[in-house]
Length: 290
Image (cartoon, rainbow, N blue to C red; front, side):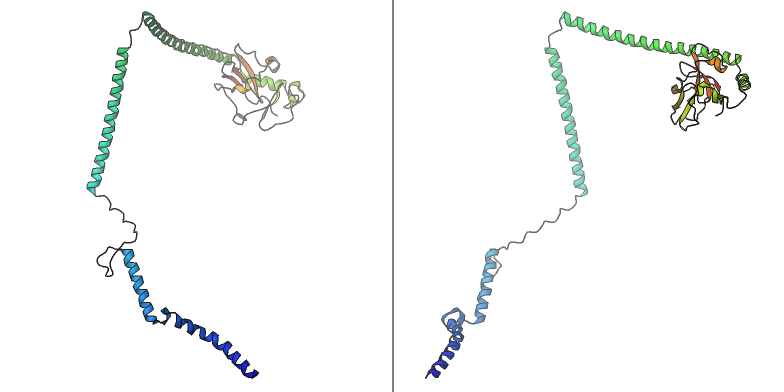
């Protein structure tokens, strides 16, 4: 008896779960329908939904369907006539703006005239001040003309004086011979290194690139554009060399310079120059050798 109950319990445990789907299908009326009917109903529902979205009937011929959003094509290029019309429109606009500006200027002129007409006549004091201002302007113009005339005259006089000085310089060159001075210099200084024991050359230690040595002054820096250059009669010596004046020309066998001139050291060259503009009157190159 116990064995029979065990077998029946086992069969029940397996049979009940297997029969549950069949029982649920029998209870649900929709599941008893054929699969084909379900598919046809679904197609019908989709068709009705499309018609409702499109706003038409089942046949689709009486309603208008909404088209998807599409970017409109670009407008066609303007024709020759349209271009001509645009040019004429722009031309008319410019002409209108010009006329408006002319009208505005004319209106402003008329406004100024009206303001001047409405302005009360000047008093005697105002007339006097205006007359004084006119006279002052005229006086200033005349003074400027006089100043320009005076400056021109001064420049002419300066040129004449410089020419006279140049004549005096030529007279100096005729009375003083550079070759004779060089010959006397060499005779007095028999050796080429005579300067080694001279007090004016104290501090000399050899040639330095970019520097000159002047007796009694020592080394000094020279701009690159002037270094190594020599000057001849008629040239103008740069003003940076004017400070190295020979204060005792007789010691060097040189004649005393005329008023307004001076002897100047430029390395181992000696120049007689005009104090006013550096005009080179006489040049002695390589007075000694290092």
